[in-house]
Length: 602
Image (cartoon, rainbow, N blue to C red; front, side, top):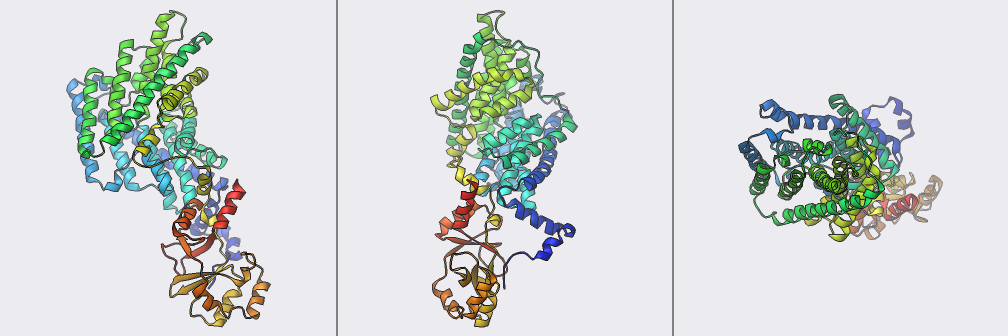
């Protein structure tokens, strides 16, 4: 019985093959780290799937209260009477707590942190139950006016949609990791009409890497998801920015000061959310979510602008139509409400509130600067844009993603140069002065998950084991006759798998490959048979078998290496089950196959 190379006849029939053969070839191609064409094609499909899901999420969150008759605009929480501003978030928090309490424990983890954790430990394979909980829970949280954003839910739902597509197609894990990035980029792009920011966010914040092979499918996913969003919402940017005077060079010190102040605000945001998440973990879930709703409701009694997404407040700040005292109050109470919602575990986003806090803080600093030099400073709305970029850059520690986001959200390129002058001081204050990690990494580390970028591990995780495994093996029963051993060796295998019944019990290097560990030609194998080298193979199977691990054909080289380390083995059998059985083995991979792949890529 042999597991040799695919038959030539099969490849000649590819043009007329059915879906199963085409999918099999696609899976094989995607196992290679440089499968640019195949990854790009699957990226387009993933973007379309994600676009449909995100548009559905937006419609649910934007129309529920309008259809219910409570508001004429999903953002107009300020028009609600005080009783509703208190009862809605408290009731929503209690409902969310009970809903998540009834869900299985494994389905309760949601948000971008869950996506990053799955990338770190499960190759990006996202469970569908968590995605459903995120969709429903995120929608309830936004509809009930909690101080959250929609980007957290859409990142999770988008990543899960793309990941589940890959799992349904049974694609290798290295391509599922890329699909997760496609889902994140498509979700951000379709939700905010920001395709460039979606791509940069996916690579800079979630994947922590930039590669050509990764960029192409992620860009195509963002494009296809945005195209679907345009069909429903149009192509206009999220905010309307009036014509503003570009700040002069004399204002650069004030812009740097803005960065320093906003960086301290971002550090407080990250530290507060991380500490509250860690300290409240022992509280009952329903109590935590209800307290988060109560905190939002109490803050909203004085400043209703803290409720919901707050994009109407950002728009007014960009137009310069909010007074200084109101901007300061919005920034501080939005900080308190968002720390409560994020730290106590509401299933909403943490980036949207950054936009509100940054716009309010930046607008307030702009008003103060304008009062110091009347008629000479840029409008407060311009400083509000700078505040958004600085707050996002410092909280996420992703300056490029922040600049691209503010560029696309406002459609104004004037913000880029002064934005750089604000973002970097804010980043330095949050990271170097206050020692804060990016907000999602900080939360993960508070939960015991050390999420970081390892270039070698990333390289291994971009390649599937199918791209490196050796298919030249033969399976022989331990009790086989010499003639059966000779028949197996006649196929010139590199490896002999010795079976005990239907289980593989031993792995031997073939005599035809013993010289250098690689297969010789069939003539040498035939010579080994003729010279009687098969006589002692049955006994050798007892004493010379190499210890081996098993690994899934969907695994990456990184997963394979970790499995080898855990088993203390130098080779693994690639098989469909947890144990190696006859008929379920696809190939053999050695450590040196993995090392050679890394050396080639590096």
